Length: 250
Ligand SMILES: [Cu+2]
Image (tube, rainbow, N blue to C red; front, side, top):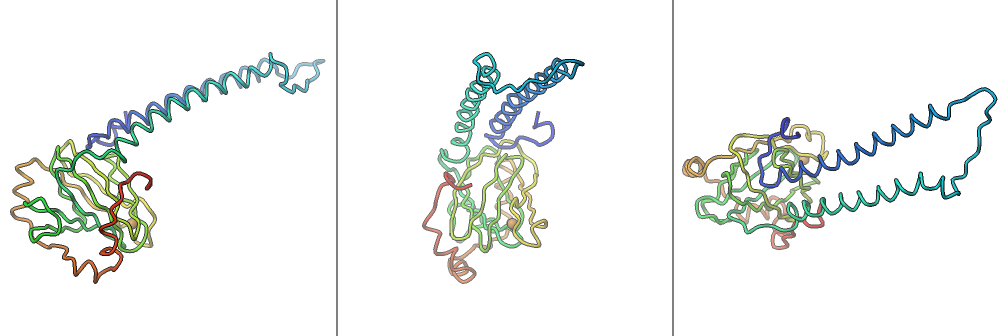
């Protein structure tokens, strides 16, 4: 249902949508049931001439069951939701499948820089391709991203991937995605990061293998050299070896 409005373009997008839908159905059913009981009780026990209101403490078993049984049901459904959420969280944020390619993402006020490995598949080599505000990906390829921030908190959000990951200064956060459809979609910063936050949008272009290879042939080489990284921001160079997975980082 969510996919009617926002394309599912990553391998885990359908799982995230399924989880949201399941939670909405469970919570929605409880909401409708609670409202139905509330309205039924309002009508049934409405004010009548000659009938005095009673103060009910809810201590008798016959009264307490109206609280206890729904409470047990809520606990059971809580466990179902938490179990389903942990499975999806683990798939998206903790269990990274082996990378076919790595891409470095650097957030700063107020732009995204992407460092692509180039034809050799290795970052920090002469054939790296550096782009600003356009992330170029190949469909059905497992990417590990390495997310940095040069200044303040940002959040790398790709709605069609159902992915959102905070960028934290001083940390290199690793996550993954596998694009599943070709096309061009939005990237946005999802963390208020200063007066230009609203301008911090970018695009992801997902191409077939052949089209991606053709792009790599013609893309200008602008490697993010190590000396530039340490000059531009001491933190970025110093934190690079301390790569953390996304587990525990929101
Ligand atoms: Cu930002």
